[in-house]
Length: 433
Image (cartoon, rainbow, N blue to C red; front, top):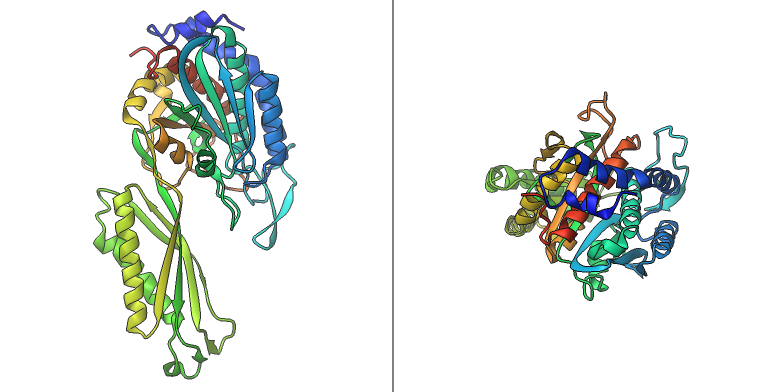
C-alpha cells in the first residue's frame, strides 16, 4: 500500500498524475475483495428491515478492522467509527443495504434465486437498485482507510443503512429511524457523503448536482365514500367510481393549470385505484393511491392542500366525501452548495474532469436526504452501464434486468476515498481549489 503522505498530497497541491495514481493504488488493494463482497451480497439479497445476513457481514468486517461498532440500529443498521491517529474533523460515509421485491432476469452466474412473500404475493428478491455495490464499495473504503489509521487525521463514521427503499408496511425504518436512534448524537459529523450506482450514466463517469437534485417523495391515499346501489339504478346511490374519474381529471388540472412548473417541477401520479367487487353493483367506496414528487417543500404543501380541496369538492358535489392522507418517505435530496463547490476538484482528480457531469433534476427520491438535512451533505452518482451499451436504453435501476458493470465498483471506491481523504486532511472538503 502506498504511504499515506503520497495519497494525501492529492489534497493539498495541484494534482499530478503520480498523486492520482496513489488513490488508484489504494483502491486496487481492496479491489478483489470489493468484487467478491458485491457478488456475495448480490446472491443473498434481503428486503428492508430484514438485512440480517448483510448487516452481520458488515459488522464482522468493521470489527475486524478495529472500529467501534454499533449494530441493531433501526432494526438492522450498522455503524463503525474509525478514529485516526491524529486530530482532525469527523465525517460520515453512508451506504444502503436493502434489496427489492423483484425477480432477477440478468442471467448472472451469481444471480439471486431468493424468493419471499411480499404484500401477499410470492416474489423474487433482487439487488435491482445496486445497493449490493454500495455496501461493497463502503466496506472497501473502510478497509483502505483503516489501513492508514495511524497517520489519518480525524474520524470517519461508516453508516450502513437498512430500508432505503422504504420499510415494510406498518413498520418504521430507514435513515430517519437511524437518526432518531442517535447515530449522530454523540458523534455528529461535519459532513456526510453518499453515492449511488446509476444505469443512466456510462461506467467511468460521476454525476452530481448542486442544490436540489432528487425529489421529495410522498405516498398518498385518497378514500372516496359514496353510497352503494344496484348498477341498473345509479341514481339510487352515489357512485364513488364516477367521482374517482373526475378526481383524476382534477388532479391533472392542478399540475397543468395551477402550479408554476417552470420554477419547480411537480409530479402527481396515481398508482392504484380499487373499488367494487361485482359488475352490477356500484360500491360504497373507492380507494386511490399514488405518489407526489416535488423539489420545494412549500410547493409540496400547496399541492397537497389543492389536491385535498379539489377531491373533497368533487366528491361533495356528487353527494359523497373524500379524505386524503399523505405520508412523506423522503425529503428533497439537496447537495450543500458550498460543499459541492469545494469537492468538485477532488472528483475531477479522481476520474478526470471530463468524466464528472452535472445531472438534471430527477423525480426519483433518496432518504440520504434525512442525513443531509442534519449536516451538510454531498451525494453523487457512479455510472454503471458498460461501454458499448447506450445508457439511455439500458435496463434502469429497479429493473429485473439491471446489470452493473463491475468497473463501477473501482470508480466508486476511488471517488469516495478521494473525498474522504480530502475532507479529513483539509477541513471543509477542499482538495486543491
